[in-house]
Amino acid sequence: MTQAKTLINVAALIVLLGATSAANAYDADWKRGRVYYRSVCTTCHTASPVGSINPSTRTKADWASYMMLDKHAKGKDAVSKYVSTAYRASIKSTNKAAEKFAATPDKELSEDIKAFLVRGAKDGEAPATCS
Image (tube, rainbow, N blue to C red):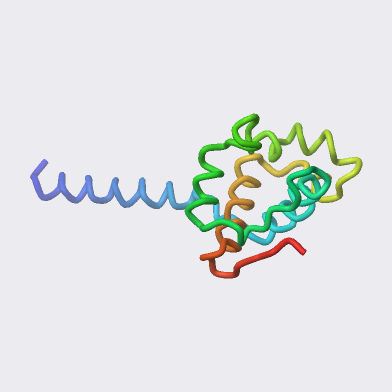
């Protein structure tokens, strides 16, 4: 095989791999994240001494870091716990959003919430409160 054919084959392989990974990428739905955050997260926080936490109280970088570090309640537990299928199943009888998203994959819902938080951050596209 000539060097030119080898380069063409390698280039084609790179394009194919790139297309495959792009097809598998999840496009987060900030609207679904907003529904879950406001219905589950805000409901719980409002009932606790912490009170509600509006997305606009932090920057986009703060929210991205918070979701990536997966530390909730000052590191006492994980954010992913409250996005998990098991958690949603445990509260679905009293929370319509948890019931509505009962079958949503944890990773997708987490990405949706992150998209809402980043969008609604104080330096985000649409700073949001949870009223």
